[in-house]
Amino acid sequence: MSKFKKKQANTSQSVPTSAMPDVVFMLLIFFMVTTVLREVELQVQISYADAENIEKIEQKRLVSYIYIGPERLGGNRVGETKVQIDDALVEDVNAIRNIMYDKLMEQPRLIVSLRVDEDSEFGIITDVQQELRHAGTLRINYSTRREI
Amino acid sequence: MLNKKRGRESAEIDGSSLADIAFLLLIFFLVVTTIDVDTGIGLVLPPIPDDIEPPPVRERNLMNILVNAQGMVLINEQPAAVASVRERVKEFIDNNGADPNLSESPNDAIVSIKTDRRTPYNVYIDMLDEVMGAYAELRHAASMDRFGVPYSSLEDNSVEQDEIQEMYPKKISIAEPDEG
Image (cartoon, rainbow over all chains, first blue to last red; front, side):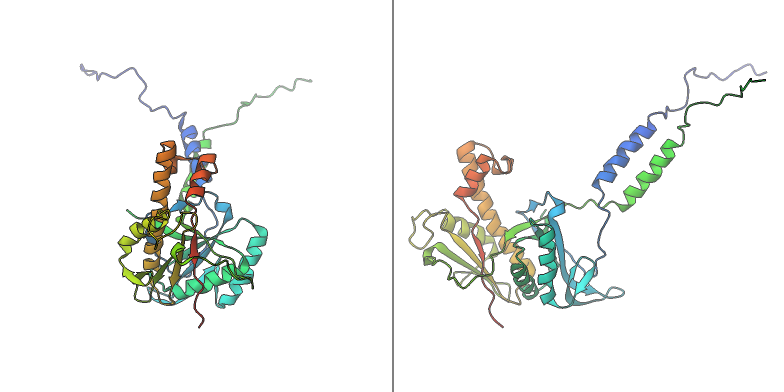
């Protein structure tokens, strides 16, 4: 027997873990609430423009997105500017009218969020806006990031 | 013998794996979460005009802003810097009949925005941002003057907010695109 016994504290050395499930559940609930599961697969490339005087869209249920930007090809190449609604590219601009009209019937307070690549030319946006006017979806929102 | 006694099992559910399950779910939601805030510049498009002629607007109540194909901003056909748009719009709206070339009252003032097919989108957004900034500053000033609080702190759809919005209504018109 050694003469010098190592001194040991009497207190328990383990961290109490009984509260861990509570902490984890709290985080879990936070992420469940903030998650948006259905994220569309973008087929066009978009980098947002910056703006200062922006407003937040509080009710996400009302929002429908239209993506406008150069089409993503394989690799890092991009093609012509295209319009994407939901998961599909819209080849014929005149079809937007019917698509948006149907959406408006489902949600009368529809807000159309235009997510446009900042290097686009305005002509295609004019076309889309004309279609939106024909469809009667007049509330729009140009999606921008906050300017820092 | 009717003695049915067995070795009694614990009546409690084992809770030690609860944390594991919760962690698994947590990691799943962590991975799929995208916290993106939807922000942007809101605008209401004009409806498609019927055959009815739009009501005539006096020349002085209309401010024409054109962004041309070269990305130049023209206010009433005079070239202007993007940074100066905000001041020009504020002057125009808040004129209250003082200058005979500017608007009669904020309620009559209409800002008309026209673009070309080859206008760069980011210049258009910068210009629209300036116009929105002009309205925001005027509303902020009116709110500070009247209620002593910033406009942004007024509650949505409150009486105060409606009053300020009525003082400075956003009358932004998107001009009809040219044919062809």
